[in-house]
Every structure is written in structure tokens, then in C-alpha cells.
Amino acid sequence: MTILVTAASGQLGRLVVDALLDRGVAPADIVATARDTAKLADLAERGVHTARLDYSEPASIAAALDGVDRVLLVSGSEFGERAAQHQNVIDAAKAAGVAKLVYTSAPQAATADFVLAPEHRATEEAIAASGIPAVIARDNWYTENYAADVSRAADTSVIAASVADGKVASATRADLAEGLAVLLTSDDHVGQVLELAGETAWSYDELAAAASEVLGREVRYQQLTTEEHVAALESAGLDAGTAGFVAGIDDGIRRGVLDVPNDALARLIGRPTTSLVDGLRAALAA
Image (cartoon, rainbow, N blue to C red):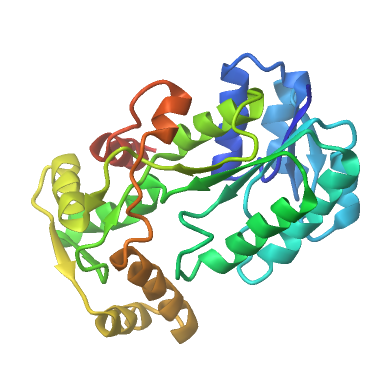
């Protein structure tokens, strides 16, 4: 069985390759792909096959998928282009007769009114239409996403956001990568949509408390309105479109898009997911 991981030069993809190796998958049975294979040189030195794969270049996808049984499609990062790029991978996977496709989607992608949801929803629909045996892994927010906020709070003692009382059921990239490795190496969960998250959702007051523990100084959560948030982002140098996009993410959190705690990820990895405090501590140390 040969397993291909897209975007293996990225933070999540790299951790998935590590998790596959930790689970005993032979390096020669893994194909790590990226647009720039030079970024995969260390994996090649460990015996992992590497290949160039660009979501926007169907020929590169078809070549990389030759002889592959299972594929992890890590969602792309080019907003506005992702649905079409993902479609290229889906088409190539179908043509190659891939036996199992795992896709990293977004929380509540099929139903959420969320700035990030439409491209994920379109991809989920495309996978269903393709008929490829698949698992939709809706990854919640990475705990590491908050490392920068906590780092800034070391100087400001404040974490500011426009999420009001919204909650997040975050998980670390390492936990999610381990769960994805389980999905790739097992025959289970085909046809399922899994919300992969932490078992407990936390509020931003709890985020501030966790930051206080990690930093050893008091940190408080400052609630902003959406308008105040956009203004603050623009004053920090973001253009209006980007500022609105970032504030739109907080709007989704305020409305509960990421408040989907469950034990699906914990059951996959066979242990509780990493706590918020421990995840932040590891992220800052890294």
C-alpha cells in the first residue's frame, strides 16, 4: 500500500509523514509531495519517496499519483483558487483508481455561514460526486494559531479579538496529524465526515488564563467589536480586504462555527488530545 501526502513541505503535511513513519509505515511506501521538492530533501534522506505536485498543474498531479493507493489531500492555502485546485487532485485520484482519499476540510463546512467554508463545501461536494472512497476530516482550529497572540501578550498582557463569548475546540497539529495517519493506514471510516477537534471547547477568557499560566504573568481578554477589530488591523498595516477577512473569522467564532468539541480525534489517536496550556507551551517553545 502506497500513501501519498500532498503539501508535505507544510507544517501539517510534514507532521503526517512523521506520524505515518511512527506507525510503522515503511518510508518506501510513502510519497511526500510539494511544489518545491527541495523542501523535502530531509525526507528523501530518510527513504521517503518525494515528488513534485502542484495543485494548479494536473500533469504534475497525475504523475505523482501513479501507483498510489491512498491520498491525503491537505487543503490548499490560495484562497479563492482552492476549489478548482482541489478538483484537479480529485480528478487525478479518480483516474488513478485511488482506493481511499482523506481530505482536510473545515469545521461544519457543509452548513456553516463562515468565510472559510465555501471552498471546503465545494470540495466536499466534488469528492462525493467523484465516487472515490473517501473520508472528510474537518480539522478544527490549530492550537498553534494562537502562539502569536500569546507571544504578543508577553509584552501587552492583552489578547484582543472580536469573538465575544465564542468558543473554540482547538487541537494541536501533531494530534491532528496523528489522527490523519490513522485514517490513512486503516480501512475504517470510508464514507464518513469526522469533526476532528479537542474534547473541550474553550472561551477567550480561558485562552487568556492559559496564556497567563504559560507566560507567568496576567493576561486578559479584550473584547472588540467587529468595527474596532477591523480598524485595529488596518492600523497595524493590513489592507481593508485582509482586515475584513480576519475579522470575518472572528465573526464565525462568535457564532459558534468552531464550537464543536467531541472525542472523534481522541478515539482515533487512542488518548486525550493535548490540552490548551500544553499545546500553547509547546508552540511557544518551537
